[in-house]
Length: 89
Image 1 (cartoon, rainbow, N blue to C red):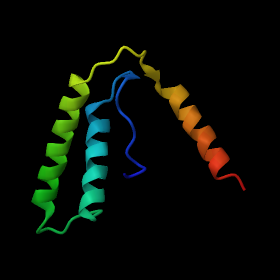
Image 2 (spheres, rainbow, N blue to C red; image 1 turned 180 degrees about the vertical axis):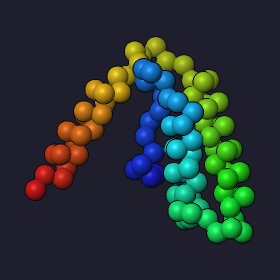
Image 3 (tube, helix red, strand yellow; image 1 turned 135 degrees about the vertical axis):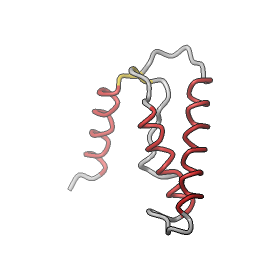
Image 4 (cartoon, one colour; image 1 turned 30 degrees about the vertical axis):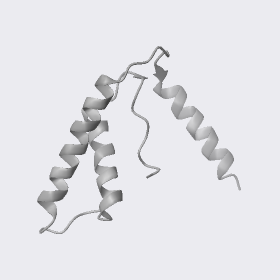
């Protein structure tokens, strides 16, 4: 899967529609192979992004967990630490 797509579930504050749409865009770009579609494919590309964003929103609202919500800043700090370790010179 695309590394740019991040987990959006169980965060405090919850994922925004903008974050969900950005993940949908990344997903459609990945599976289509297009960063920016041609004019002939623009409408199909936009419909796919809308459909994936809608499905993602529905999924996120339907999921349930007993785990405490994750803190965005703490998770970002962990990701930065992993990246620093991974890419250390």
